[in-house]
Image (cartoon, rainbow, N blue to C red; front, side, top):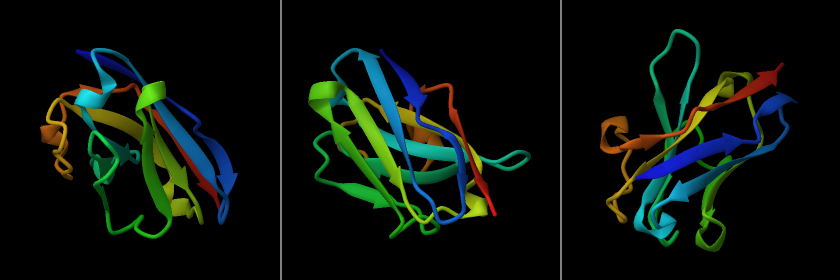
Length: 125
C-alpha cells in the first residue's frame, strides 16, 4: 500500500505557472505508475497526465498537452506536475493517484487504486 500527499497548489494569475508535488510513502514508489487528475466544483474528475514507473512513458489529456509536464524522482519518492500558461479553466482540486501496475499509463480513474487528498489550484483571469 502507498500513501500520497499533494502540495504546491495555490492562487495564480492566468498565464502563470505552478508546480505540484506528490510525495509517496509506504511500499516502493518505483513499483507504481502514477497520474494526476483534477476535479472542478460540480464536475466529474478528469484525467490530466500519467507516467510509468521509470518516467520513460508519459500521457497527457488534450486540454493540458503542451502546457503541463509530468515527471518523477524515484529517489525522492516524488511525482511532479509542472503547469505553465495556466488558464482559468484549469481551476480545480488536483489529485495524484497510483496503480501497482508499473507500466500502466492510462486515463481512466478506475485503474488507480491509491489517491491523495488533493490540492487546490485557482487561476484568476
